[in-house]
Amino acid sequence: MRRLVYEVSESVRIAAAQIYANKLRSVLTALGVIIGIVAVTLMGTAINGIDAGVDRSFAGFGDDLLYVSKIPWRARAEWWKFRNRPPVRTEYARLINEWIAATPNSALIVAVPTVLRPFNLIRGEYRLNNIITFGTSADYARITRSDLKSGRFFSEFEAQNGTNVAVIGYDVANALFPAESAVGQSIRVRDQNFQVVGVAARQGSFLGIFSWDSMMVIPLRAFRRFSRSTDDSEVRVQVDAKRIVDAREELRGLVRRVRQLPPEKEDDFALNEQAIIRERIDPIKNGIALAGLFITGLALFVGAIGIMNITYVSVKERTKEIGTRKALGARRRTILLQFLIEAVAICFVGGVGGLLLAAGLTQVVATLAPSFPLVFSAGLVLTGLGVSVLTGIFSGFAPAWSASKLDPVEALRYE
Image (cartoon, one colour):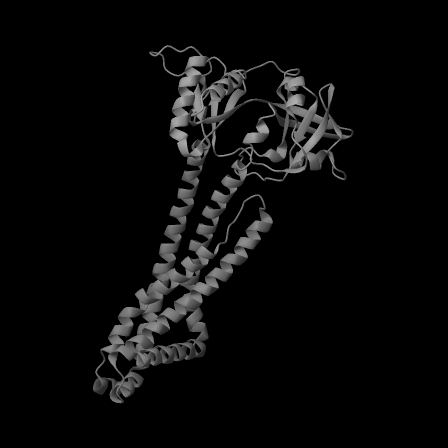
């Protein structure tokens, strides 16, 4: 064991000396590995960033919700097939909550009515157009995962009385109140003033997914003063995440009963969930992965061929040295380790260089496109280093094996 440790340490020393003596050749040889590691690292960073961006965008809405809607999210492009369906009325939430209260073992937790519409918000000389505004109940605070930066959510009393109070998003607050706190201030919606009682913490948005940052939430009864339309109404139902399948079937049966659908008729409503949106993100991730794997595979293949050729050249250049070492008693294993470790060392140095370059490019992208989240994780670093080591083993084994099999007499006579 001690001999093996000595052989490995000596091979590492020789490899370092050879790389230092042939710096330019080593860098050019490792170029393919560098490109491959950059590609695989940026691919992983982008995929992790997409996941993080989607999670961040969904964080304010909860991932344990079912949405009772008129149109299924999967078929938005075919809305004309569902446009004649009866609307989902906000009073369904009251009926669902009555069912929940009367059913101790229900997989449903709470139902919240929501209706949305864009409104223009005005505060003095500041104006924001088409801000998505939610009309909802005080229970909305129970199902959202967003924290409040300041203030509070409106109360049940304010919701029942239709008080003109509002909770606004981070970006809305910054735009309307750039130099002061928004809480306690008033904003105008059409001809009515609303007092800001809360400001949501910054959430961020990604790929056009709705974000709390650019929205406003007001009591449903206050919302009804501006719009009686039910076209954009839905009921959000928080469910037991561990019983999601049971909750979906329970809610489907309950809504069918509320809408008085006979058994032979199909559903005239949709139960949507965030998994549907996540499914739409998967093709983007798959496309990035395929492109990254192609570039990575091509670069690493070219790099491996280059390292294999250079290692063969190194074997030829040092044939007499190999013969001398064998004549002095060096084992085949010692010679094999020497050249194999040299190839792995070049790949490892290329891997480190590729990771440093990828980290720098990640910072550049983060600066130029701050809305696109990039996650450069320790797992990607380990993956990059692992890929570079495996590339070195793959490309260096054949030349190292040929060097270990050289006959010492023939090697000493080599010119």
